[in-house]
Amino acid sequence: MLQLATGGETVQRDQTEFSRLFDEYHGLVFRTAYRITGNAADAEDVLQTIFLRLIRRAGGKTLESEESYLRRAAVNASLDVIRAKQTNSAVSLREVPSADSEPNTGDMKDCLRQAFGRLSPRSAEIFALRYLEDFSNQQIARMLGISQVLVAVTLHRTRRQLQKEIRSYFGGKL
Image (cartoon, rainbow, N blue to C red; front, side, top):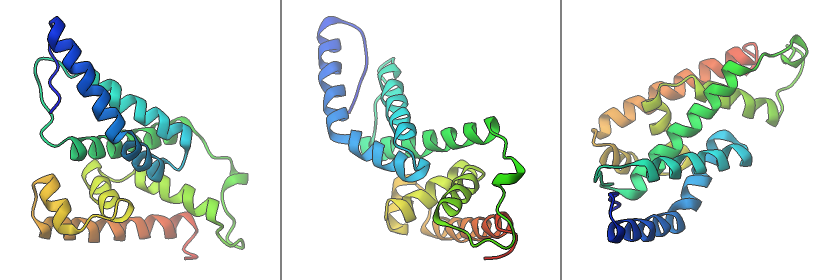
């Protein structure tokens, strides 16, 4: 458990503990962020944000489950990156796929990222844990402290929402 405080011995212990956490989990945070953002630079930004937040946790706060916290933080920070890009970018009419064109992989990835960014944080987190991180419903329920039924219902609703948005993006063609 990471515990941040002030004082010489505590600071040294905290630096050692932070180094251990970074060494152990930086790959997990990066992979999680990359799967969601689809961009190495954005994933690096998420990685940096997560560990900076961890350093700033002060006042003796502890992490109960390091891996769960870091994975959830990576999902949420990645969604923040996607949402920020959506609000800061406009799409020209030339970039909108025509009804005659077949969707390509790049179009589909862009569409999924945009749709993912419009999900609620909880829905996006559950979806990412299930389909990007490959956890079972039971594992997700334990991680998040919710029932398996709620996980299943959330996944079902999220898939339907994503399907609607994808169809809408491609003009009902899919």
